[in-house]
Image (cartoon, rainbow, N blue to C red; front, side, top):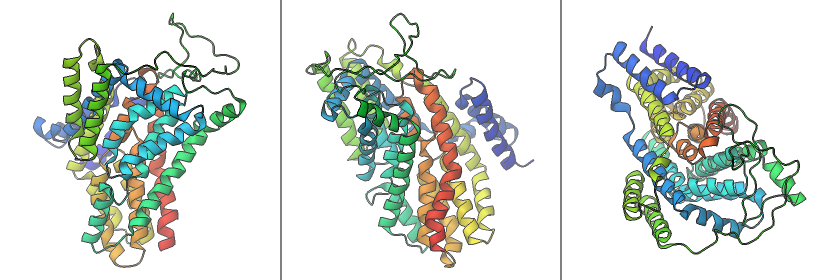
Amino acid sequence: MSIHVIGIVGLVLIFVIGTLRPVNIGVLALIATFLIGTLVAGEDVDELLSGFPPDLFVLLVGVTYLFGLATVNGTLAWVVDRACGLLGDRPPLVPWLIFLFAAIPTMAGALGPAGVAMLAPLCMGLGERYGIDRRLSALMVIHGSSAGNFSPLNGLAVIVNRAASANGLEVSAAQLFFGNLAANLALGVAAYLIFGGLTLVRESRLGTSGGADVPAPRPAEEPDGGGGSAPVGTSGTVTAPAATPTPVVVADAPERTALRPDQWITLTVILAVAVGALVFGAEIGFLALIAAALLHLAFPQRVAGADKRIVWSVVLLICGVVTYVEALSRYGTIDVVGDGISGLGVPLLVAFLLCLVGAATSAFASSAGILGVLIPLAAPFLVAGQIGAAGVIVALAVSATVVDSTPFSSVGALTLANVPEEGRPRVFRTLLGWGLTLIVVAPVVTWIAFVLPAA
């Protein structure tokens, strides 16, 4: 049996076992990397670990540490409270405001992970305050961020245009941007309809939604054995949800006070980290790590326990899976699949299969890296002129980026890290199911929308 077949079978087993049994998928992925690397590929330990993503490790640890600190000392709650005051009593609009907030950094030129790292804590906190389903808040953050991926200012657009130009191909900047924007807006609408948006509208019309100053009670979520949340009383016992929603009277909340000096400094430091990363392109993971450590040193009593907010289970999950996928790339498995598809000789079929490979691979790896590989693979038959190059490139770009909703992408991982611990398993399963569905659905839809009209 070839190493490529073994690698793909191993990937399937990792997810099947990790889904059926309560074992961190990242642990299974690291074990599989070791077994295949030593027993089949003959690699030593240094080679095995060469695929470990140190940049992603620092990003996840640094950002969750910094915002864990801002949560412990009350800074994040203050910001969310002020945002609620500006929004007023409009829960149905909150998911779309989350979508908009998440889209702004990427449209302005930031790569998705940097923008989500800074805004996911605020956006998810805003959803919590208004009782928005955590799954809806998470998907709005992810697809809002993805909506701006191919802005003319964004690095992904530059990568696509350079790869196309280097292979004698052209794609309209407007077609690339608006095609991706439309796809993510459609996914935002789908998430809104599936995960409680219509309920928010209905409750708002009945006047039973939460006010802006007092958190609305979170809707009860059905127990699923995987961390789904339920109303919990102060004694720790589960309380029965009210038969009908209780109107909340808007009043001055006790937390609506002036910021303390340590909170002012925390907010200033977070803004400085955002400017350093989004404007000057500094490494956000290390910036966040340095900022968090300095704040912890300066205010040890105010931020006691902030380091425990680092989501090590998510860090292990993501880094383990990325290490395994990098091993498959190192063994040439991805190239073998791509080359086999490109050699089929049927342009429409090749375009669809390349979109499928792009979606499946990008769900566990770098979207930018995948696009840099797929466009050159598609170039030979696109240059022949049998099919419109621009449509295929847009389809490839969209297929390879909308799957960032999987919890194994940096965008999905950062979003998941900002979900309260009791709800994290349920949101993880939703993001995994949503992303795996998009691996199949996105290539089909983009092929119909962008490739067929150009044939």
